[in-house]
Image 1 (spheres, one colour):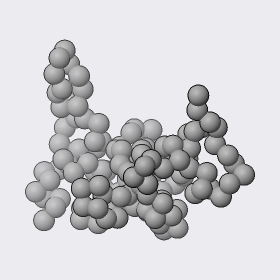
Image 2 (cartoon, helix red, strand yellow):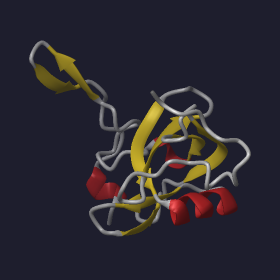
Image 3 (cartoon, rainbow, N blue to C red):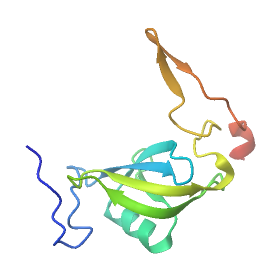
Image 4 (spheres, rainbow, N blue to C red):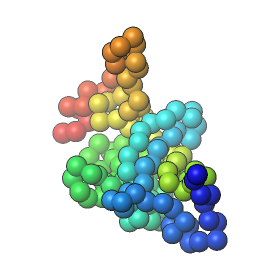
Length: 134
């Protein structure tokens, strides 16, 4: 059985990070409600996100902080930060700059749909990634 979040603790200490010190973070468009992406945060990236008002994630592949938009210019301006009842996931309500959160040039990273027994891209590419990451 899960344990409810302890609101008496410091906000950061109340969260449950995994064994690698990470917590899943979901970015959702504050205006449309569309789920834009899922990434990972550690304590430092979450603190920087709250302090700066801009989404900062932990890149597992690069093993470093990743400021969303640092290469593309497509920053995420944070409007609210929430957690679930267990304190083991983060929801960030953002204003997506440039309208393209996905490195594939789409308006969401969740663009594959299960159709029959195969995954198919169902969202269009808005901008060629070669034109985003130069």
